[in-house]
Length: 276
Image (tube, rainbow, N blue to C red):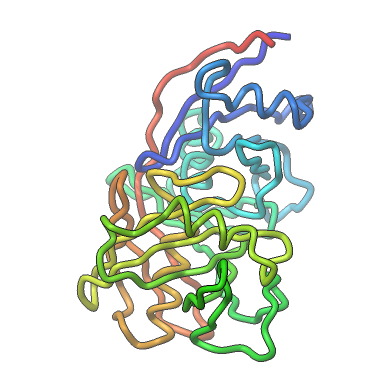
């Protein structure tokens, strides 16, 4: 099978983008894992499919798959790449439009400086929505990780996130602790894990362990989650620069009752054909 694809990234969070507007995605879990392998395939953090939308208010729909073949409910860097792909294709013009994500409609805006602004919706802190096992909704939770209590914040940005505040991001045990929290009993379907260092009221440094992927150079929903958790605790202002290993994103959130907006770039790397 010959499969045409685009390779893209959003500040280092990389994707294979497939045009599925005329025929459905024909890859099973094993094929997605093979395509996503960085030595035996093309390699990606997530696979994105662009599909026709059944909702008349949304111009297109997109699907998201992790490297291990599991589905994801949302991908902040991915939606910017989908919008950039559609713009280059001539299917999306500058201005505000709606796309249908796996977790619901998303508004995207193509800016004049080639950046893309995305309405990521209002952060959801209700534990059952993640889902996350908690007696009551709180700003801070303590979960057991191999006999140690670790403090986290928990929020859904269309997918589940745990956020840990750390004093020294460079020294954070992202792989060891991230993998344990991803599979903690408190998160029955797993979660993404953000390690956030507060730099000021307008800047956060962040590393993210992504569910089904591992540590990535950037995570859009992870950036949104870190800002949301710290904003709710009144540690940051309404506009924050999130500095990730692959680059920076601007996140804006006025607070409860308002949508959270993410702004950042989307980059084309190359076009190719994969022969399974």
